[in-house]
Length: 261
Image 1: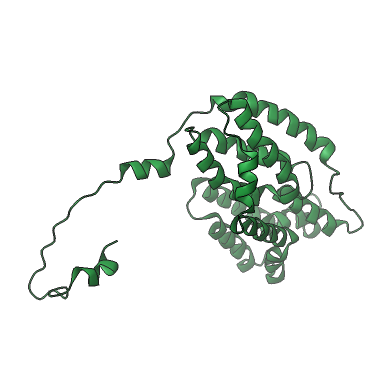
Image 2: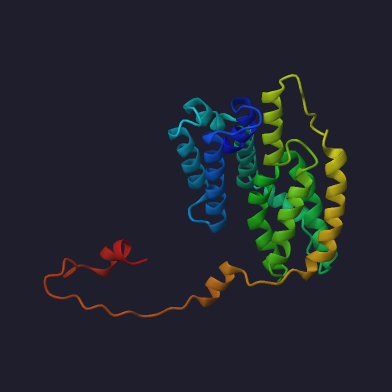
């Protein structure tokens, strides 16, 4: 987020028609960051933190600008929404809602409809990030209950959450970032909650139809957790404790928690 804000601020400290070393270094850091994220060299949060720190060390970002990225409305908004979603999961409300919404029908179109419509609509008001985090384990259990590969539902769910999110300012992290940048550059400008719906709603409708028609062509991949459970086997191991070993004359139950699971 700090790098995105810096890109928006570049015109304010670079002369028109030319770019000094700060601009080229920023572009270079951005390219390296993008490569590291694609190759998954390190977790995304570590990569972004290191990239922003490099810009601070080089004097391209000030410490206040660096810390400003952590105080953006988007971070606070998503954090609060994650708390709300977690509360729904803990008090059982999520389980009740999913039982009522997700059908047990054998019809593929009914299954997709019961998943895509509520996820798409809710992501417009609760932000797509916490919605996907909340629904992923629920949808996986539901798919296994239907004896269907979870991949058939998880990928369409992720896309419909994004499509639903583009209908409102709250819906996606990108929308919140842009809204914050607009307010920063022009405080008198206000983007209404549903102002982008006239563009986002048609995209949501067309995307939903596409997912309905193409979703069934998604390959049925084996659920990795189920695969691990199926491959679990019991086995017996033999250990020889030599003389002088610290474990000599020690009961198995006394060392099982420290050395064995």
